[in-house]
Amino acid sequence: MLAAAAVALHPDAPLDGLAVGEQPEPAPPDDWVTVDVRAASLNHHDLFSLRGVGLPAERLPMILGCDAAGVTADGQEVVVHAVIGDPAAGGGDETLDPRRTLLSELHPGTLAERVAVPRRNLVPKPSELSWVEAACLPTAWLTAYRMVVSRSGLPADGGGTLLVQGAGGGVATAALLIAKAVGHTVFVTSRDEVKRRRAGALGADEVVESGARLPRRVDAVIETVGAATWAHSLRSLRPGGRIILSGATSGPNPPADLTRIFFQQLSVIGSTMGSRDELIALLALLARTGIRPLVQEVRPLAAARAAFEQLAAGDVVGKLVLTC
Image (cartoon, rainbow, N blue to C red):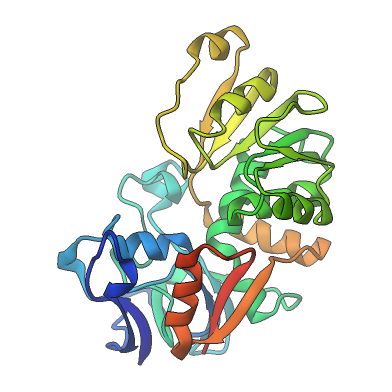
């Protein structure tokens, strides 16, 4: 079958290890299901894999990709949940299973004509969502949903105030749209004027330059940038507020400012991906509210290299999707 796979690891030139061509068909174990992929989307995780982050050489070749939507052999239209884990081992949450992994780390991923996953990793696709839209959700959007809805401590029926650092990133954009859909006030920052304008057009209540003073302090901060925005995130919180952290693209070790954290009684909450139940809730939210992921480009699977080149160049404001 046709697939996009990592066949070599190159930390400084990740695309040198990418091969788009024939790979073996899935051989699912018991209680796994093969899905005919209709659409799959790229994530920066795919580039990290090609650099060798979380993917050792002994597992090569490895089909890349975490996100997909498709059809099972018995005709079910499904979205694939990318987290392979045991909820029982995580106290009811597979993302807390110490042995959890993502598709394309230990098991072949979704950038292929077919992918095999555990049966419990299949979630029904709402009819309101297209294949392309559904394929954008299981990584960046699910990460954002968990941060905004499950981990932020904000009221479920809206009314909170939220700062999203770094407008333009996939998780940040999803967090903005999700937070507005559930009724929160959202402030957004960016160094880039074009990205600030785009965030305003997507519904942000206030958009400011990175590090600028906000109209008021917020209940929670969505933090994916790390070192470059950390001090601003801490200063922007009201006493008792929370930072929800799922990434550190500018560096993982900023000055902690522990005095501010304990004196203001702030909380720093780590967050990674999301559970199957949260993916079901996210799909229902999109079906109910009409919000949709931004899609920049849709290409056939055979043109996967061009999509990877675009992702690596950084000129991306929406999801890059491959169709089969």
